[in-house]
Image (cartoon, rainbow, N blue to C red; front, side, top):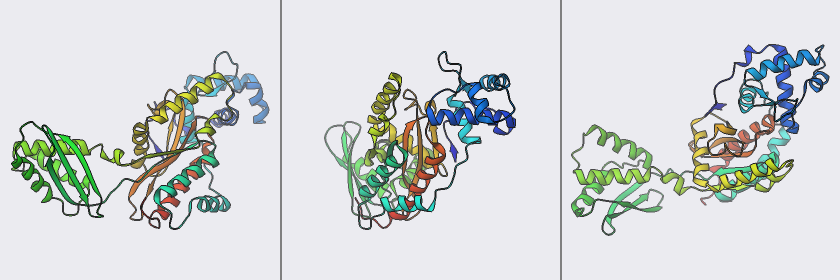
Length: 361
């Protein structure tokens, strides 16, 4: 499991004594279950250990000094901090495996031979939202088709149309800024320069090759043509997010079990954050560098820091085992991590198996 965008690292789990671990676990589990702080007397009853409330308070004081728990408002009880939640998830949480019935249920919900990729992803996201009681999120696949043709075409003063033709026949047109008075010869030279380096490469692969050549100044490309190529790749750098979309399902589930005005404000802020779809896509894209499920808790994600939300997300792959998107859930920080983590992980793997059996959207 990847730990991304983490806060200052708390002490390693192994450095907590058995008594401290047991008390800390109870505080976190009580919070995840109810959202309420828990006090020393209740802990003493739950633990079943020969510890007095006073002894438990001493341990709680140490945990508070370590930044793992805090007292909300004037409460005598304690809840985990965001650092404490990260510490719990990384070092103490025991993630169980899904049962065979749960696996069959997930597969049954989203399997559907002959359906489009968009239908498949929408169904998977709705299913996750229902099972997790959170909102489900998925980024549609990145197009990774190899290129067949690239051409620069004049489109008016200071504007150039770039035509990208993929091997699968799809065509994408983009307008880029260009120097005023750019001669036609520069357009032809830029086109020929890229065309000679295509060789069935994807846009990302072509970009890597061209940038390396331009940076090393090993090309004899004309200065104006080089500027045109650089402008093109500057535009294409953000192209993946523009050619993909974000599917969100189950937002209404975030309105369940609200207990205070601050909860309603948190969800309102979260709804506002979800409207910034390009930012959400960029956040989910961070999971593509991870091996398996990624977890973002509260302020670990700048996008959702104000709403105090947690995101559990996993990349999914296509039939060629290439990572092409990400799927997950978002909800309050007191998620049922032990249940949702394997659910998201298995759903992503099922999607990977089904991607090759679906038709293009």
